[in-house]
Image (cartoon, rainbow, N blue to C red; front, side):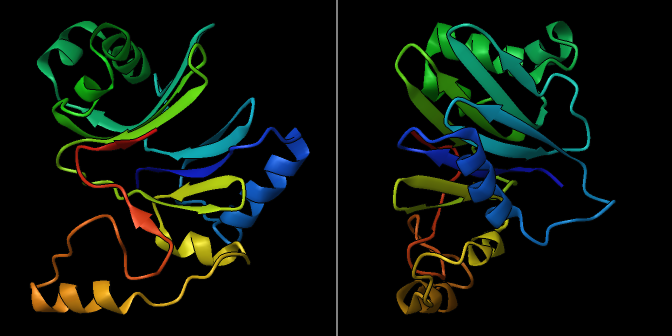
Length: 194
């Protein structure tokens, strides 16, 4: 099981307040079969789900990088020995965000660029790992599991009939970033939100 789940406060909050928001999102998700590791930044708290946490995080003065999933890129295999976050952050610094989306692999990432005070969340072009998000008040909630948002107790998550029926008409495929629940969006393969 791979993915990210957490909250980014778009307005500075105390650490206890962000922990409470993240606990609401995580409510009920407890299993000895699920491996996870939680990280805290200045105005965010999130959890990475992965089978191996080696090299999944890198925190530097101007950049923090977190990766869940795997890279199959030849350069990564030869030179980085499992240091996923280092590989991705160097690629971000050298080539920009767009080149972080086209690595051969199955992954989702979160980059905090401290110089520009910006978060970037993206997925690979195949997008094996789902990524959903919603904005409620001054908070961006995200998760690999869409049902986590129902634990929040806030937001209007009614059925999105337009999306539901377009999926039925086109053989299960849906188009755009909408999901079957209103106000919850899916990150398209090979794309990012900032």
